[in-house]
Amino acid sequence: MPMLKSLYVSTYITAALSGLVAALLMTMRRGLPSPWLGAALACAAPVAFFATVFTLPIARTSPNLHAVLGAGIVGTLLSVVLDGGRLGAPTLLAATVGIGGTLLYVYWYSRFAVPADSVLRAGAALPPFALVEDGREIPSRDLLAKPALWIFYRGNWCPLCVAQVREISAQYRELARRGVEVFLVSPQPEANTAALAAKCDAPMRFMTDRGNRAATALGILEKAGVPAGMQVLGYDSDVPRPTVFITAKGGTILYCDLSENYRVRPEPAQYFAVLDRFAIA
Image 1 (cartoon, rainbow, N blue to C red):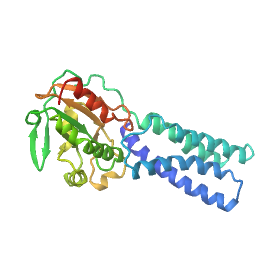
Image 2: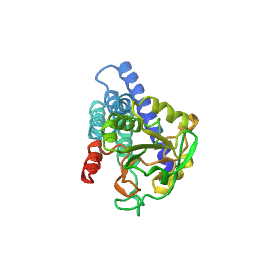
Image 3: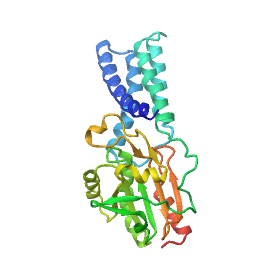
Image 4: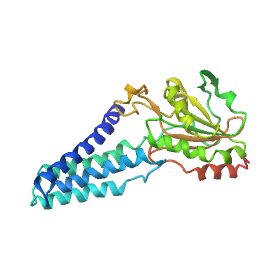
């Protein structure tokens, strides 16, 4: 199943882009009105969505993407009407990509299974693990001298992750004023992490989880979570699910968000609400 997800998202994006190009070419060839116009609309919605996510600093989206699915439904119906009620190639393209593909993306690919018994829960002690910083392995017990905000992110290939990291960078002064250390953890190559750190104007601590050992210890590892093809850029196939937790001095977990949808992540206001509740300032 994880491998199917890895293959699916690459296929979905490629199908939407290819379908849009083909539908526009067919519309230009046939002229208006053409049933291919509906197929173009259905394919354009996911293309526009991914283009927006990859070009704008968006750390989260709506959970169900009603606008994208709505465009797929409208495009499919438009193809049927303009094709005289027939279920021809334009309608099949619109329905497959705009409706079927989007439903799978929203309700299957984007979702994570709920952990049966997570070790990350409020009130529990942070389990031991080790991370790498500047080539040196550091046990987690050496990182618990201060209250800390921990963010496990998938890598630079994930635009929502990068936006989330930069969002926290913008809030760093307020976190530092409260005495909170910020740890940003990813299994990606250290050179990629260094490139991301250089874009953040804040002395946050960027850590590497080699072999996803920490993610495994914390129960947040997602097998084959990287889209198929990204491995050629040096990324491991396995990644952590996007996870945020806050620990008190000494390692007691105060708050944890185990994302059940990779596109829906907590707002920074939630972190500050937790810190205020525990009078960390």
